Image 1 (spheres, rainbow, N blue to C red):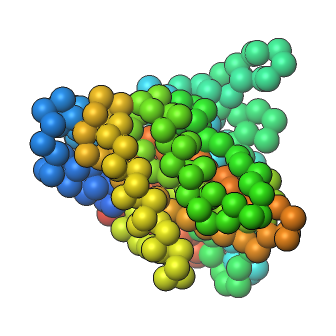
Image 2 (tube, rainbow, N blue to C red):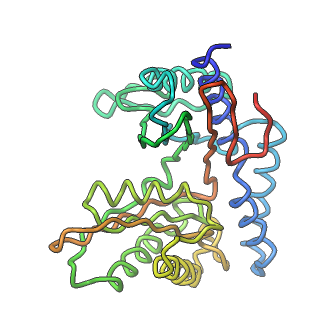
Image 3 (tube, rainbow, N blue to C red):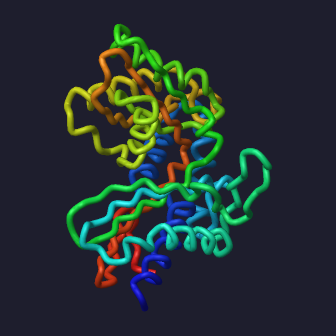
Length: 295
């Protein structure tokens, strides 16, 4: 099998894994939320989510009808072969996955309103690039649902508002969203850089397992403080009340201009789908987020 075919097959499998099997950190957090919940309505909602996850794994069918806009995070080594073919490979894999899994077609032209029918279109699937040293290709498939995405927000705060203003903006975002993004949610928060940078950092933050706090102790403390504050809101699973409104808060940051304080918040629903694999030029495949054999 050629390396190009190996990459395409792996990407199709990553999309299958992403939409049918949640990563362990998310499943464990949902089970923990169920076990500690005392509100019967909230407990019923969490059980329904856990049952849904089990059925999706058993039947290898998507856990949610909204299989999202297809986004890829690509980290590629400078010595990896076939670099120029990666965009076409990702597009072809998306078309295949849409038919084979299947995925709901979600790529709609913003002017004509026509659906492409195969989850591809202008800039879709969207590819985020990172160049590294080495002879490998690391791909994360990140299907992002529309309902939770609609609750995401960008705030261009005044620098004087500082950390307190940032905290208020994040918590207010969750309060405004209520039950609309299908909580319990995971929040990606991007601070600094600029308007576009803050939002890109916020979405990238969702790739980090919620069991891993930020390497900066001060940021890690902020993540914990925000998580506790959000869970005191009482919004709860599906907005029906309960202890767990958020499973995690992940923050990333960039240095900012003295005159602006951008804060991006990207909301992820309980179906926090992501799947990653590393492919080497010799054709070896290593899955990073799921314990599975090569397919």
